[in-house]
Image (cartoon, rainbow, N blue to C red; front, side, top):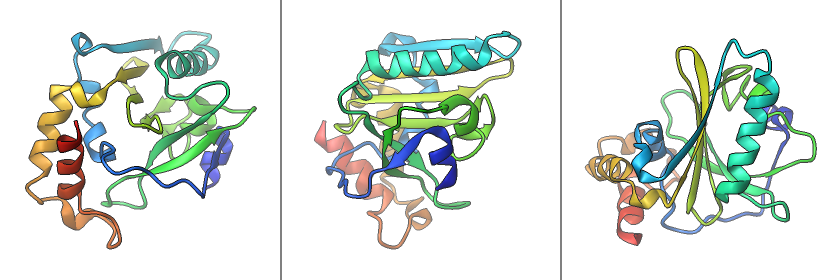
Length: 187
């Protein structure tokens, strides 16, 4: 996955995820989670002359302060879409010493163009969700601790338990309805 390498992320092949992680499809609703749910956000205007530095610095600061990863263990999960009309799955990555999440990374699997991010990242234990999105005049990076407490995410997950999106998963993946129910029931 070339654009992950360009972002400064190395895929960790030997990682096996625990059962009960929030499905990546559920985390797509994260920008709708209100700030009252302990969502922390940093926003940078497109016209800011320091956009490249600020965007990457905000992501790193929020990721470390929020607990996405630590300085001693820089591994975390990234939601990756295997193809059009397919459900995203978690991929374990490790942040390398040279990285550019918001520039080169957003110009590939982590967004639509440099400094136009659209990604979701999760701590290995599933307790910290980091996500970025592109708005009309700015980009934002947010961290949500304990995503299982979010009523927005829980309502969306509950709706997915009806099986209506199960056919969008890969044949060897756990059906989305089952993964959503596991996540809901584990918290």
